Length: 315
View 1: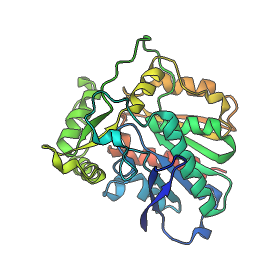
View 2: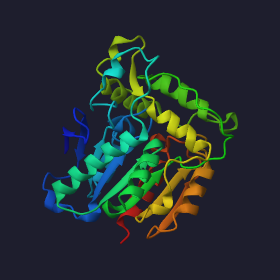
View 3: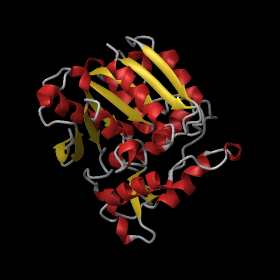
View 4: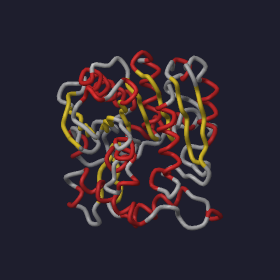
């Protein structure tokens, strides 16, 4: 079953869109290890990222069918959550909204909602890309709230040359067609790797969710969805080896998983995380062959899904 609803963030006037996906509405069926909160990245909101309408390409559906209660969060200014005034004004001349510290407040509000709903003291937390950065940051600030932490294709601390950040507007646009997504994401691949690995049917499903995520998407030709660029400066700092948080404060069992062809979040980020996860109850790093930054949409996605499930299921 799937249920969509709104909850209040910790900031006045901010409502967060949450999707609940599980095999049952009976919350008593789900123990502390069976509840998962998923945090999206910098451009895709949670439903195209984790729940496109293709059953074997939806991590949320895959996990729900295996007995988990899954919660998908849209950070403010993404998807069905509150769009602040700046998102309706021309993108130039305004500071970019939805910085990481704001995303962490939204994650915190969602975790508190889920804990209260189930009567548990901890949840499992999964973040992809920028969501891995913000989920990890949240887990470092609230170690008592996170049972297990999955950081998928995360950025943390890279090796790029330090430089001044150049702002590019308050928000950007992501295309709402499968072929445009393939063209854009293909720029993250090396020519030697051959054709892009994403299936057209999956990309079309992702694009349909992108189109539905923004009520203004149909007003542009071709259709596009807005996304806030507050994450871009934080990601840029992380790539320069200037992380906003320290993984030594994480206590949860932590899985760092990525594809070996991920040029968006290169391997040094995973290496730095494994180096700093010194106080985690357990730490594990998995690299999946031939996987890119968008591995959940690729033919080998079942390997990613199974790695996540096995990690969460381990006592």
